[in-house]
Length: 365
Image (tube, rainbow, N blue to C red; front, side, top):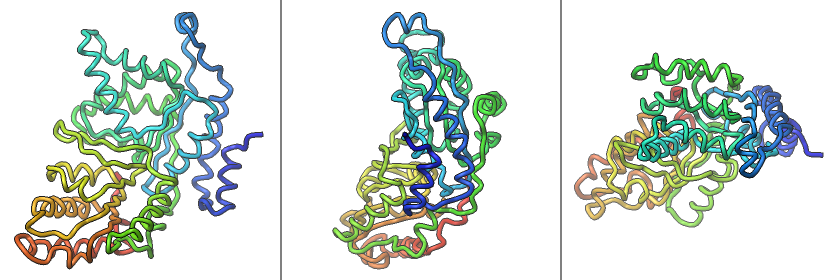
């Protein structure tokens, strides 16, 4: 007999893989309900005749889990999504999903259709019965203007949605341009999804980093092993995929990403011609950044050094937790040449960002 989600959670907490939390456990009955209802619903009929004459399945009522960062929302989503006994399901970061949707709309418009949203929604619904989203947030007006009709079509075609968010639904797209046009989407979420707050007072991500080395030098094999262990611990087994951010029409890619934690090399982020807007976007998208292989800085890599300074400033202002490996201690990374004097502030910030309580005062966004 397959163990239930609650039994799995209790077993993992008993084995020490996760920490038992009453607030997390209170969410499990809703996830159990969705798991059971999706498992009991008939699968879509395959083939031409099934597609032509079958009624769209009724979507199981979904779940919107919101709460502060580091409370275990993504961990619960991991357990739930793996436990759901259907094949036509997908787990995806909400931002990445909306980028795919926008690309689909662009392609549909080229065909001259009157309503580009419809073929995109039908394409998604034809493949999936469950969409599990990480970190639903709406900051782009282009996304805000389409999500209402898109999700209405997905729900009407039998797609169940489970999502995590740092915001209560009423605060989505808060203060956004033309927000009045967005409000029906909030009403739709409340109608088609249960809304539950994960009220845990414990920030488990922060707890795991307290009293832990977060700046490794030199950037050798020992540092790589230690960082890989931290990556596994923070993400529960590694990243899902790359996270691509659209900034001024360009793509900024974080090679590994999962549930607010990103991992990249110095050259991924500072070896490319990125600017302040790119680094602000990165700082806004992640809670923890693992940055590996920071080299010694000098006139020979002056442009890369300038980008590194801008990146650290963006992370510092956004209170992002930084885990890094570097060729040397912060004060000895950039000791001579143009820019070395200005780097003293960056070195100071790198020291400050190593403190155990760094990032605790980051506002929920």
